[in-house]
Amino acid sequence: MQNPKNIWIKHPLATLKPDYAGGLVVAGSRIIELVAAGRTPSQPVNEIFDASEHVLLPGLINAHHHFYQTLTRAHPVALNKALFPWLTSLYPVWAKLRPEMVEVSTQIALAELLLSGCSTASDHHYLFPQGLEDAIDIQVAQAQQLGVRVHLTRGSMSLGEDQGGLPPQSTVQSEDIIIADSERLIRRYHDHQPGAMVRVALAPCSPFSVSTELMKMSAQLATQHNVQLHTHLAETHDETAFCQKMFGMRPVDYLESVGWLSNRVWLAHGIHFNEEEIGRLGQAGVGIAHCPSSNMLLASGQCPTLDLEAAGCPVGIGVDGSASNDGSNMITEVRQALLLQRLRYGASDITHQKVLDWATRGSAACLGRDDIGDIAVGMQADLALFRLDDIQFAGAGDPLAALILCGAKQADCMMVAGRWRVRNGAVCGLDIEALKARQRELAAQLI
Image 1: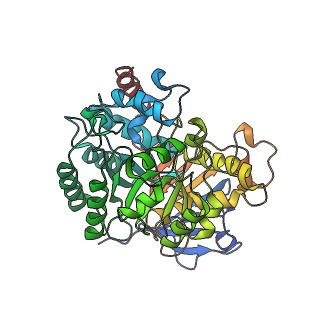
Image 2: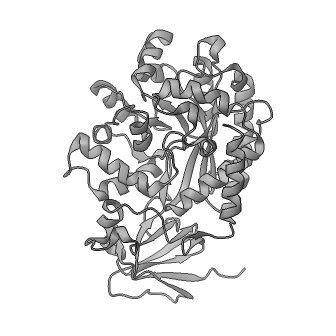
Image 3: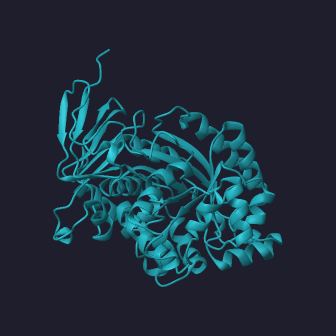
């Protein structure tokens, strides 16, 4: 078997840590050496990538998304609405999704994420109307084609309008069907090994769209197969009111009652917690995916990130759905996190290093990963390289700070598992213009 070539990512313009200011060496899918400033690798290299004009980061990790929503950005029926009316406006539209729509929207979302410096993406797909039962299988195929690392969550909705929930009946499934398909997907696609390119998690959509029984069954199945759990929680005051009316308790109490208060769980949004609830979440090690753009667009509120982190919760960043963002750009989401959280905690506590840490190590911890999200020997070679030659960087001082403060939008090069997936600002092997044209055609069918 041929030995993997050693690639030296040489002399980056800036790095998160000084111990690899001279770059790093990649062999196969992993980082095998860090190079200090002014030094050369200790072992022979077969290829050199000159990174002297690039800021080098670990690949960013998107902890929460809805790929299919790239088809309904700025949709006319959903403009200028808060979460509940926004959802009830869009559910009938999303009920019309077809397999090709999932295929193309997944390609669009993953390409957009790659181009924005993201190497690992978690998606929360919970819509399975008739004819779309294989949605997760379609997503796996597209991720493998593009070479993006993914955590695909088998979402679900079982509580339709007839049972007091928000979704229309055509979008919900029975608990038995959901659990059977969840088990099928875990057995077929979930890779427990370090360096896994595909992992599966279980993700009942939200307290207002699934039954209590399904929440409990999902927790039991996740424990049985050692996979993560994910859901939306504490996003709005409407959700709190729904939980109190429907279950007689607040969202965190409900979470505990169904066996979800554990470090196997990460939550999307996590905005409306009181001090006591934050303490309980932290003690349990529950992760939080902060989604700043969505929280601002839907006027949902501000996640108490530093309080949650201090209590013991991993905090990551997610772009959320492209119908509530309305984009899939990970590096701009990092900037949004900095701006929104400074309103809550001030400028000195929310730094560019802090938000980059959330988007890398924090998101990795939410996903239960210790092999991605950092640049260190033995870690997966997931790397994002950004040039600072666009007009918004003219006159910038600190390169690392400029990446966030001046508003970087696109990575120049991306490596995932040691393989180049973006070069010179283009996704390798993808006809992006043809893909965008087909996405527009399909989106027009949902207006």
